[in-house]
Amino acid sequence: MQQAVLKKMMGAIAHTLPDEIGCDECFARSDQLAELVLEGKPAAELMPLVHAHLERCPDCREEFEALLDALRLTL
Ligand SMILES: [Zn+2]
Image (cartoon, rainbow, N blue to C red):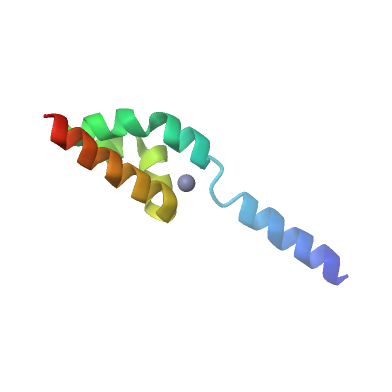
């Protein structure tokens, strides 16, 4: 009984964000997102999945901010 409830809950959590991407995909696209940000474009609208991942993943956000800093230095 309890196991069935747990399984149901896990299923509900897994289906909350069906389009979410993982860290690997986020990392693969983060340079593209960084370029949009530096160009002053609406990065969150153009790449919502990557942006959403950065919002909830502190590790990737840290990487992304470091990338932004590095790119700003080259401008
Ligand atoms: Zn991540």
